[in-house]
Every structure is written in structure tokens, then in C-alpha cells.
Image 1 (cartoon, rainbow, N blue to C red):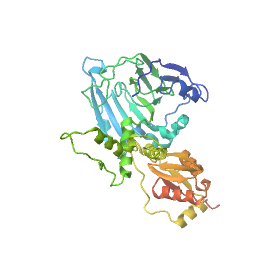
Image 2 (image 1 turned 120 degrees about the horizontal axis):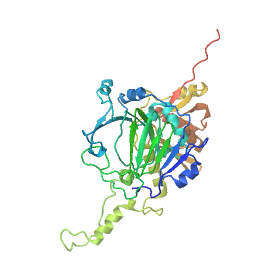
Image 3 (image 1 turned 90 degrees about the vertical axis):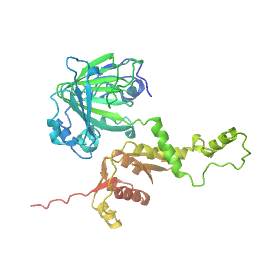
Image 4 (image 1 turned 180 degrees about the vertical axis):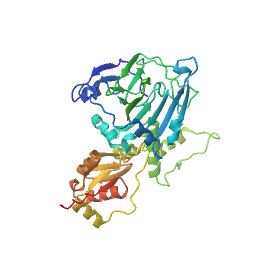
Length: 415
């Protein structure tokens, strides 16, 4: 777990072509996972990529991950600590919004970048980060006073202010209490004593590293675009790795004791037994000498894990696999390939080849194809490497629903 930064936040003003107010390398060295940063006018020509009504409509979609948080203020008591918090989970019906109070509520929708291309374009400003590290763009709309309470995130987040204004309070105190309230299902802080406070305007950007207590409150109708990072917990990493190892162990890989001696005491687990347990669990050690997990295994496991982790939906295969003739026709017809927005991609080098990971599955490909699939949301099929191996990978990705053919429309005949 990361601790709150011991260095206070910095406020800067963006420079032309530098939304962070500095080169990315300087930001990563001085602020990333170290201290908060407020950038005024990071996006000076900001225009909301979607309207509040569009967000509400998305929250009504069956597959959307949407929540509404309502703060019920205690009569005569202005402190949020005295409020009662209500969490509603989507999908919602249009009539649900008519039942909301006039103030102090927030609608949050996850993965909006997967649904809306204009929201996805926001991620281009964060291309200095590894693409597999970025989780999603969550968009929130709040009426006056709306918030989700004081809380702590265990991942990096960039908060881009859209419509309206929001007051952000944070605590840069490394000793700030982090205990949660026990009267709500939301993970809200029991105590919150801010050390810094700002009002963000449209186009402002607030970066918060993990572990910084914070609280945002809408000042009138307000939208916030939150670019969150993927930061799997150590327990999640270990559990997935253990599952992968267990799946690859043969049935006869069991605890054994061919050197067993007569038991000295009933029920005793002696030192010899513990040594056999360690010998039965070689994955507890990383080594390339055959006594533990070698580097090749670790690489394959992590590539699959990180492209599968926190994936809300799976790609749906087309009704029929793509045959040889259809693939050749698509190539000759100038078709394009569009990547499914839910299919995460990562790759790594292995000698002259690349290991391409798509939604947890590994494919051997050329580095050129791996780069193309990972970098482009849509690309010309003719731009892909022409080798037989790469063609087979493309067809496998199409048949799995990770890539979709977009055929070029025929030109209209001249009048």
C-alpha cells in the first residue's frame, strides 16, 4: 500500500503542448506516485466530449457499469460526517432519474471510453504512460453538493474538470487516519482533515497518487472525467499466478514421502515433512535453474494476466469463422480492422519474435504486427505484415471477436 505523499502538492499552469505543465519525464520523476499536482488550464480549449443526458442514457444500458451516490444530509448538521449515504447500482431506467433529489447526488459510469470515441480520445494525452497501465475513463455528473464522500484510492488518477466547477480537498498529511466508516457500504473515511483545497474550472487537471485522502464536491451542475490506472493488489497477482501454476501441474505432482521414517509423536509435522512440503511447492522460488519459476513462465503469465485483469466484458465471436476466401477478399477490397474496445492488448519481445497478448490469450507474432495491434484502434488490413504466421494471428483475433472487419464502401457511380 502506498502512503500519502510527504511532500505537499504543487500548482502549475499548463504550457502550450504540455497539459502537465512540464515534460512527461519531469512529471514521472517528480510527481508520479510521489505527490499531487494541480495543473490550471491543462486543456485550455476544453469542450465536454459528451453531455449529461448522454451519460444518463449510457447508465441505462444493460452492460454499463453505473452507480448513483446520494448524500442525505442530517437536518441542522452541515458536516458530511453526519450524513447518511445511499448507493444505487445500475443499469437504471429513465424514470429513476426523476426520483432523485434536487441536490447532493452523483451519477458515475465506468469505462465510458469503451462506449464513446470522443471520451476515448482523451486518453491520447496520457500516451506517455504504458497503455496496459491505464484502466478506464470514469465520468461523473453531479448536481450541486454532489460527491462520493471523502475516500482514498489505491491507484493513480487524473481528474479532468469538465462542465461546471468542483471543490477538491485533499490531505497531504502522511499520518492522516485511513479508517473507514462502518455505517455505509461505500468505503468512506471516518475522519478527514484536509490540508489543501482548490476549486477546479473546466479544463483544469488534478493528479493524485495512490493513498492521498481526497473529497470532491460539485458547486452546481458538474462533470468530472477521471482517468484511472490499473494497479492490481499483490494478493490478486499472487492468486492469479497460483491458479496458473496449479493448472499446469500434472495429476501425479503430489506431496510424497518415500523417505518416511516411523513417526515419533502422533500428529507431529516434523522438519522432514516441512522440507517435503517446500519441495512440493517449487513456485515459491524464482530461479532459472529449474528449481522454481523461470523468467519465461513469469513473462507469459504476466502478459496474460494484465490483459485479462479488470475486464468488464468479453469479446463475442462472430457467427461464423472467417474462411480463406473471405480473408483474401477483405485484403483485396481494402478492408480495415477495428479493435474491440473491451479487448486489452500488450506484447513483449522474445528473441526475434513477439508474444502478443489479447484479453488473456497469447499469440506468437512479429514485433511489427504486435505493435500495430497494440497501437491502433483501427488500421488497414493491407498495412499488416504479410507473413503466414501473422495472417493466422489476425484471423484468430477476428474469429475471437477481438478484431472486426470494416469493409470499404463502394464508390458511388458518377451521375
